[in-house]
Amino acid sequence: MEEKSRIRQKRKNKKKKPLWKKLLITVTILLTIIVGIGAFVAWRVYSDVQSSTDEMYKEAGHDQIRNKPVVVDDGKDPFSVLLMGIDTGDMGRTDQGRSDTMMLMTVNPNTKKTTIVSIPRDTYTEIVGKGTMDKINHAYAFGGTSMAMNTVQNLFDIPVDYYVSVNMEGLQQIIDAMDGVDITPQLTFEQAGYNFVEGQTEHMDGNTALEYSRMRHEDPNGDYGRQERQRAVVEATVEKMASVDSVMNYKSVLNSLSANMQTNLSFDDMVDVFTKYNSAIGTVKQDQLSGTGKKQNGVYYEFIPDEEIQRVSDLLKDELELN
Image (cartoon, rainbow, N blue to C red; front, side, top):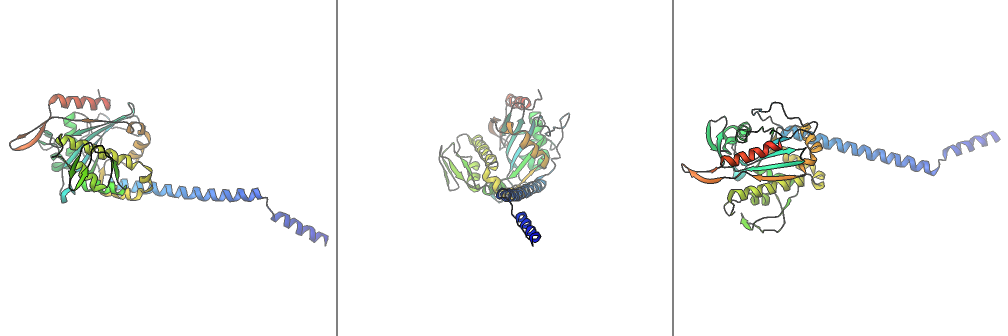
């Protein structure tokens, strides 16, 4: 009897665990679950982003004029990107479209600066591959991305490494997917039923932002004023895209991007740019290629003086460390 009593007491003692051990086990299990869920979510986001960027990826097919290709893996090489807003989808268009918005961006991790140069869409220049002089935005209509990139390379005598193109309807969808952007108008005007007040910050949905950037005829600076507003919309969109709200809503943002954007930046390239060039992306300097508009044979063109083209070329070469 005594033996059986001792055995029962041992079992009883064995069953009882100190409170701190129970708490430790509970906390460990909870942490394991949280880490597991976090890892799954991170993997899912990573997988979704990679899948979307794969859909957006399209080779440029332009002439490579660098002595050696730019490498973004180590975060040391400056590079250039041609940003194009295509008017396919604008005003109901469904054809090839033209690059009505053209900006050339350089990113330099050594100067920790990003430079964005706006190119007037009516710039009179040689269309490389077509053998004619015409408006620069017609290069895309004639030969797509490759002809547009080759024409810009020829204009400034610099390599264009990457491109990003977004159709006009797509810009609207991207902004809507991010629940709008905040923009402070630099001019008071009315466009398509929308009223914009100088200095009064407004939260704009996609259509409002599109109309804000589209107006040209009432702007005292003409197309240059329109380009300034386009840059403001692009900057606000990029900033919002990197915000917490957009990260939480990443799925709809990715869907709108993959449906409306094309680029020759691979997924790995994008990861390298966002992780290794963040100091340069944080500081943006804006510039404008400027000329004089007039008609030639009944067609309106923007004629850029040689010295102005040289000024911008020298600026871009400095940022790309080609001088």
